[in-house]
Amino acid sequence: MKRRVLLVYSNSMSDGHISIGVSMLSAVLKKSYEVKLFDTTFYPKKFDKMREWREKTLEYKKVGGGLPPLNKTDMYDDFDKFYDEFKPDIVAVSATSTDYELGLSLLKNVDVPVLFGGLHATIAPDDIISHPKVTHVFRGEAEEIILNLVKKVLNRENLEGFRGIWYKKEGRVIKNYGVPIVEDLNRLPMPDWSIFDERHFFRPFRGKIYRIGAFELSRGCPYYCTYCVNHTMQKLTKGASHYREKNIDKALEEIKVLTKKFNIELIKFWDENFLGYKKSSMDFLERYSNEVSLPFMIQTRPEGITGEFAKALKKANCVNLSLGIESGNENIRRTVLKRYPKNEEIIKGFETAKRYGLRTTAFIILGLPNETRKEIFNSIELIRKCQPSVVNTFLLYPYKGTEIREWCIDNGWLDPNEEQEYVDTHHGYILKNPNFSEEDLRTLRKVFSLYVYTDPKYYPIIEKAEKDELLYSFLNELYAKIIHGS
Image (cartoon, rainbow, N blue to C red; front, side, top):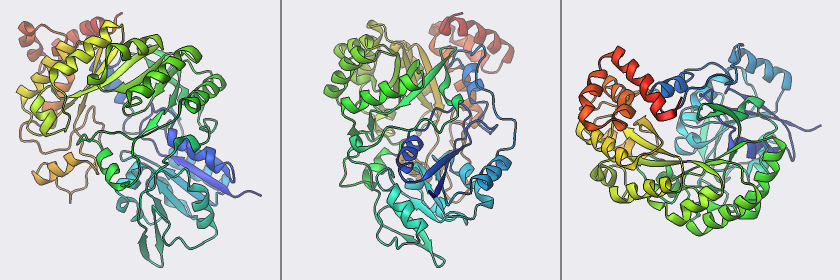
């Protein structure tokens, strides 16, 4: 009889896509173990209003209906029942920084080894290994070592020197060196989507519900933005290539097989910078347009959008580009965020995308170091010139492992000794910013799109709407029709 592994997908947001990492771990573990998944996605949680907030600020078009319903049962009771019935030999939890506390909270009645992984486990393992129920923490990407690791844990074999593993032994925490990653993505198996609830596939886009599939073509990012953990990951994985791509044959095989098997209508590529090297992206798009051609969405950088690239994206059926601007002030972008393109390059990228009929989403962060209302209006003016289809606005959150967190600590914006709540970055702000209160930033975020799509001579009306809720509601309804259509 096969031993049993209980995978736990700790997800605080009720509109989450399938986890690529968990689907890969399941595919590997099923080679030797019986695997089941407990998924927290569809239980009521603190971030459930996120979509409602984003619809109100005009980032999303309102969905008329059809979103998957949430569970009506208690998550903790369900987990304990699931655990008791499955009787796993080991529990393996995957979580990000916003979700790891939720994963830990499920473990109260677990009495088998607990292996905890994911991004937060890699960046801040002390937060997790300190929990009394966690016996092992894995730092890095686990697909190539998970079978050997689970075998060793279940057989109580010596883990001394096992790269990436922290574990408890005789009351002590043993911290093995290293953060291994998968250097050749082409050795990985086909992702296992079968373990996920069917509701994961039904996601909204532009006010309608589609069956959406999540894919990766690459891992890592070659850039060093201070608000992202990638620069820390580059340091932790020193000696390995942090940015890696799948070859085109493997990528297309996965897309063809999984989109057919699960009736996918729309694809979301989760690459942090869509196939960051231009030659491979062009080759992929050419074959994708001939062999798949399903509509898809990507994330990339505006300064990298050439006419040739935009034309290839359009031909391949790209329906949305998410493009990071982050700040409209060049000095803040350069000195605070380590993003170096000039405003003219950003504007040109958006203009090129628009010229080829590509829909664009612009990303902006509010509440940055050295930012005043003047700099926020620099962002508004730059976006007005870029003319994206829609704007997504975030409030700065200083995640562990980011350079900007260290700036916030050094400058008294954040006390590292105080417990920090993980908040929805569309609605919450935890920093002691001398220029803005949390309410100030939430108000500016609320009206941000109104400013963007208004002639500056009418800005006094929008400014009045910052405090006049009745006027804001009227303008919001009017601008929703302008931005998203009827």
